[in-house]
Length: 336
Image (cartoon, rainbow, N blue to C red; front, side, top):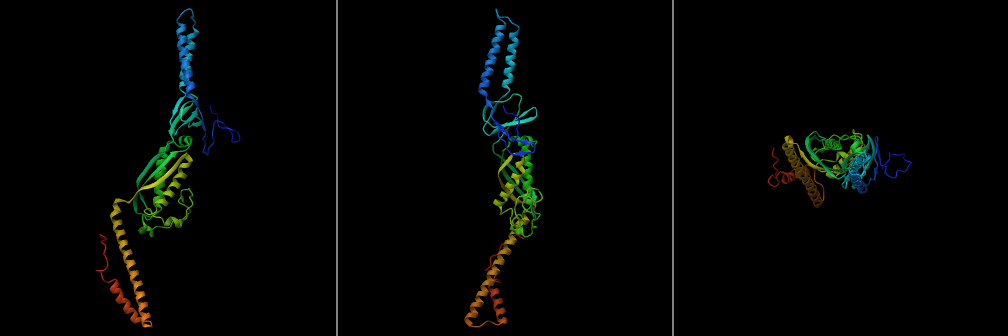
């Protein structure tokens, strides 16, 4: 049977010390096999039945025989209360009169102290879907964002005794971390120049998490294009929030991202207009480069440089030819 936690310098053969969190130091212990106890219970039942049989048949007539038989049945019920079956990746947190005694992770048919209060919980991987949540991004535009989080209970005692309901705790912290992530980044590059620069160190600025990440790196990440980087930031944030209660976050991924319905149409038109402006900027830069090359080639053939008036006239004519011809320039319907 496990004993109470001893000092760090004293060996504890039945327990494995782990990280201390708050007032809970979790350790595991091994229970004894239930089959010998089950055989003992069967023997006690047979003995009690035999004693009752002898008590009612001469020549053995003793008033103590029924009392001993009743004691055998009571002891049997007491021993049967200590039987427990654990599946693989399942744990049982054991308390003795309100005091934590250890965590049983040994799968199979086992026997514990019948006075133990046991609380079972699963150590298997779980999938938590958060959202879609409506959040304002770094620019203030309302967006919808959702995430899929894969987590498991790593420390059963801490998950059971540090929080009232670890499932609700995971849901609340996941939503908080996702809202914080979305509020620190613009939706896409078209909104990036309007985003306010992020100050401080790390994504944990203002939250006390202290994740090391420079502010200039954060300002260059958008929600739409920085999926892998944002998933890493979200994973680190969740791990820091879940570790004190014994929860291990394995993976976190953004599963849904879109503008809110009330501004989706307007933002799509804005993106289309930005694309048209970017395309015309590229065309203009290309035309200017072509004109520079043409004038340089012309001056090289003539053997002297053109006068400023002549150069300006030729640049104007070439710009009209290269850019002014609307039939040669593809148009884009912006829907405006």
